[in-house]
Image 1 (spheres, rainbow, N blue to C red):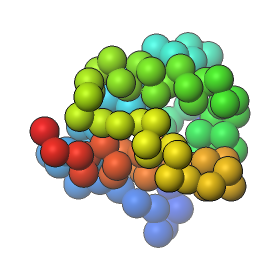
Image 2 (image 1 turned 180 degrees about the vertical axis):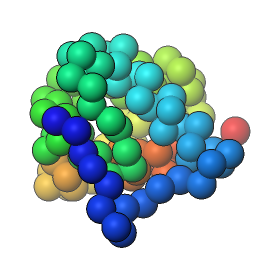
Image 3 (image 1 turned 90 degrees about the horizontal axis):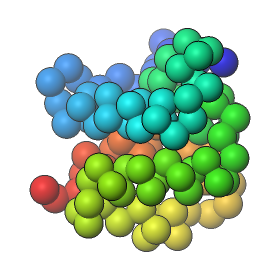
Image 4 (image 1 turned 120 degrees about the vertical axis):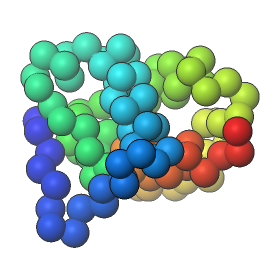
Amino acid sequence: MTTTPTPDAVTPLPGTDECAVLAELTEALHAVVPEIALEGTAVTMDTRFVEDLDLESIDLVTLTAELGRRYGDRVDFPAFFASLELTEIIELSAGQLVRYIAGRPR
């Protein structure tokens, strides 16, 4: 289940908040769903949680709880997910979540 960036893939610039958030998100994913680490899955900005990582809704809930523990009240994950339609949640990419987290005030 390795996703390969396409030529038009979104890549965070090194040294940016997005780069740090992607690393944190990857750590959280490996903590919540250890099987990902065993499969050597590379998490990129284009990685989709459901389609590429086969996460189920309970995995997303657990992931957001883990991220909430790491980021505290500055990131309102319930509000973020409530703003999405079901199809948008199914197609949600790591990049979308990274941009949301990076865009929150510190």
